[in-house]
Length: 121
Image 1 (cartoon, rainbow, N blue to C red):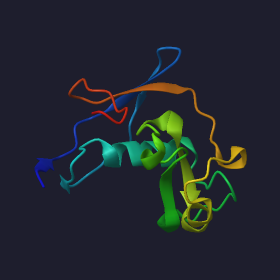
Image 2 (image 1 turned 90 degrees about the vertical axis):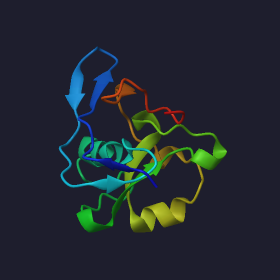
Image 3 (image 1 turned 60 degrees about the vertical axis):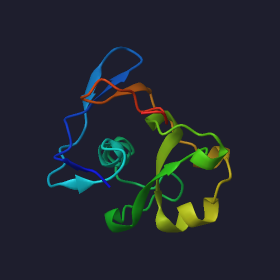
Image 4 (image 1 turned 180 degrees about the horizontal axis):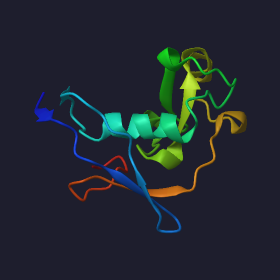
């Protein structure tokens, strides 16, 4: 795995053209997609660090879940992601259920290198 060093500063553009700065992430990362951790932190922040299904606020057990799984063609994008606790995420599996879906006005994710996070970045 390639060492990407410090994560570049990302920002998100919503449908109205407003910029949302991603949370600052400190430290070094080793991962294939350098924007993944920033995207996860953004989704948790956007959803108020609260499970979108049960309302749990146990930050240690929160995950950024894909509403439509990557395996089933879902995008790696905030519009397809929601904050869930471990328990709800385990129960959800790969089902697309209206009560699990999150609402977001973020329509585009742009990384510092200019690439979009849409599953092809």
